[in-house]
Image (cartoon, rainbow, N blue to C red; front, side):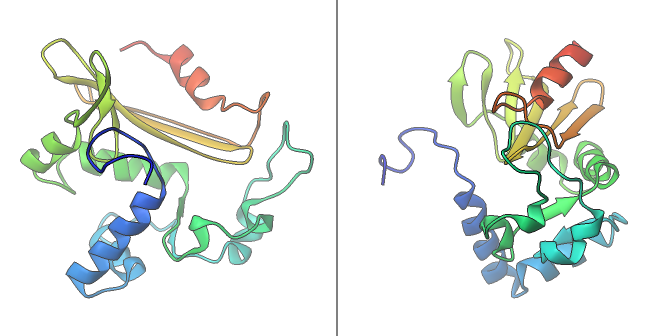
Length: 193
């Protein structure tokens, strides 16, 4: 261990693998079946793939460009946590449905949603990590924006929800720029809420 559990914040994708195992144990279903039955089917998310084999979707994937020494799709990359039966790949429209369902209370109760967007690990004044979301809050602790991003080679994504207005912003790119994600820059320049 890098430090004692609970002593400091340390984001790790591996924590989502552990969460998936907990869901499987508690529900008695595979992770893929649980997500399909509980979320994807009820929300009509038809372009979301869980536990997927990226080779099956190769022709539908955007190719990466930019700083990489080669052009590739995720299907061409070495196995990673995405291929451990836990990865989720979705279109921007399905990602919008997912965030809207969270915002509108379709997926979680009001109390559970409040816990989701409450800062549990402080990363600075009015900034921290909730349950799966980074949170920027006002001086009274009310979330102004909640967000999360992801990177995989030259692929970059970021989703933002502005709880006061319900505004949702999503940026998905397949372009690397000097080894950095451009999604945050794009979204920061798009709106100030």
